[in-house]
Image (cartoon, rainbow, N blue to C red; front, top):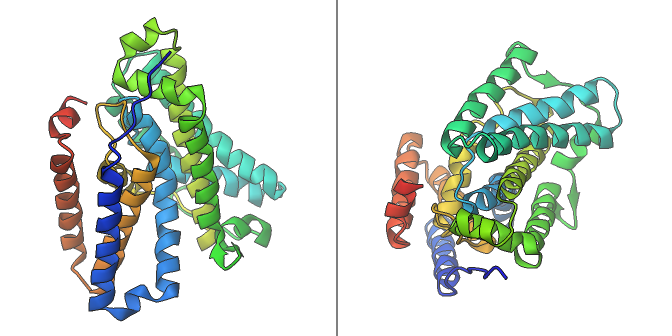
Length: 315
C-alpha cells in the first residue's frame, strides 16, 4: 500500500492569516478594495489563474513542471472559436477546445514519460510550438464574432457569482476527489516522491505521468474557453504569462518542487494571495514593473520560508 504524504497542517492557517491580513491592510488603506464588486472581481481573476494552478499542482506533485500552459490556453481557445465560427453547436465547440488542450497535454506527458525528456525542456518546446501554431493558423489576427451561447461560459453568472468562479469550484472538487479520495492521488504522490519505489509498488509511472499533463492541458483549455467567451475574442496572444502566475500560486501554496508533497487548498490560497497583491498594487497605482519585482520577491520568500530552495534547484 502506498503511504500518502500530506502537507504540514500548520501551513494552511499561516497562509490564511497572510491572506486575511493582506486584505485587511489593503482595505484599511483603500476602502474601495473591500467593496463586494471588487472582491468578486478578485475571485473571477483568481479563477482563471487558479484553474491552471490546480493542474500545475498535480504536475509538480510528480516532480514535473509545465511551462506550456499559456500557449495551450491560446490554442484551445482558437480550437473552440474556430468550431463556433463554423456553426458547430456550443457543446461541441467546448469539446473541441478541451480536446485540443488534452491532446497537447498528452504530447507533453508522452515526451516526459516515454521519451524521458526533462519536463522543463519538453514543455518549453511545447510552449514555443503551440504559440507558433496559434499565430500560424490565425495570421496573427484574433477570431471574433461568436454567438451568445459560446460566450455564455465567460460572461454568464449564477446566484450572483460569475460562471468562471463556479467552473473553478467544480474543477477544484473533481481534482480534489482524484487526489484525496482515489488511489490515483497516492500514485501521483508516489511518482513524485520516488519513481523507483512507485514502480516497485506496481504503479504505472509513465501512465500516471502522462495523465497529469493531460489534466493540466484540460485546465488550460477551460481557461481558454472562459477567456474567449468573456472578451468575445480568441487571440493568438491569449495566456501569455499565465504559467508564471500559476507557478507563483503553487509555490506560495507550499507544494514542493521536488514532488510528492503539496496541497490543492494551499494552491488556492496561494493564488488568492498573489491576486489580492496584484489587485491591490493596481488600485494603489504601483508601477507595473515594480509589480513584477514584488512578485519575484514573494516567490523567493516563499521558497525560503518552506525550505524548498535546494529542492527547487534540483527539480
